[in-house]
Image 1 (cartoon, rainbow, N blue to C red):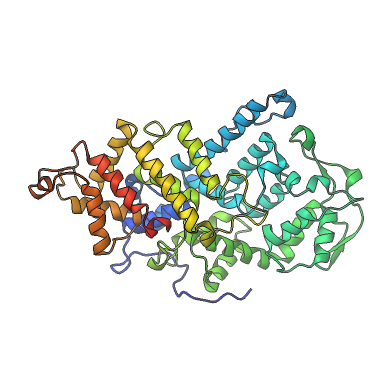
Image 2: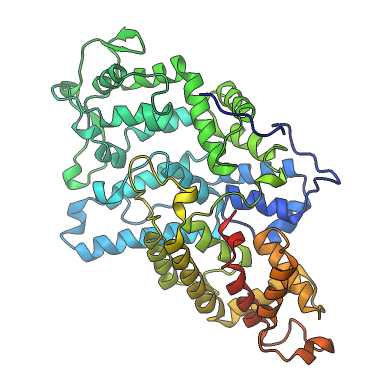
Length: 489
């Protein structure tokens, strides 16, 4: 894989300088890439620490989280539902809303799990079992920063994956190549990168025999020796009576460079920039191999690097629908108890599906392409409408939500600020991570002023304690969320 080296900064840790200071915009850049963005409080915390220490705190916090709390129906099969389809779908959509809720209230591990769901793709409508959906979701969260080799080995026996890619139908007499192909092409090595069609055929034979009762939504996965192809296979030029464990040993030993480069390139493209830098990828690749496939050291190295914090990478990724719709909550700090209820999480779930990012169901086994595929003239208009619904609905529904908006503006300026331009510019930088051109700033200021008489501003009698100030902030957000800058992260 020959990748052009476009950038010159390195993987050495970022050391703030006068020319490259550790400022709120860089802290927010990190929080929006590794998660869904941070509140003013989170940014303030970041700035009390060095960038290295803050990244370590984030990674350690994710790794120290316990396993996700299982829902009451986590181990249910179809018999447990006793034909109650309404209850089945209630549980399903409740779980969709739960993941969205976690993206808003946590944002960090849920973002990593979302990334891996677009790597180890399954489609919920194919396996059609709530228990399988839960086991898959837990696996994504458990290994979000875990050992990648163990992640791959465990994923191949996950009920959702076994059904989705027909591993359950892969038996000695009739080998099914679906999972074997994607294991090499999409999950470990990259298309055409170090394997042949013959390798796919032989890997499929080595993976035969793993079974579960998909027709009753049973999660017990076992090896049926009678369905395993107990004969020699030749994989990557090596012949033996290879089995499931052997396949992974062959991949991660004989093709370790291909695996490491492919996965590190995918991480780079998602979290940094769509055009990978060969020198940076090579450094990440070596770290991945040296740490025996542990993901945390790779993420630490990348997110601490001076390369990651280059200004050229800030606001260069097109946001996914989830990022567009979740970040307003993350950046304002508005919580569920203040403005968001089940109806809102359900509506967000509906919105992201309309925009092409249905949870648990990327568009195909290759996942959502992302970037420019996320947005066109039609979807941009829909994004604007949904954002309008969120800010004029949820953000103004309750006193608590309105107070949160006021508190944000005060925290970004001061409790005695009377200059609407100062407030407008502070909110612009918080939400867009940059200043706007003077003409755009003037328009933003007009939206913020709204219908407040000009003499209030001229005499200094206006301040953020006015009852109208939360409505002024929402008016400003209405304008900002229609700018191209909001579509970028």
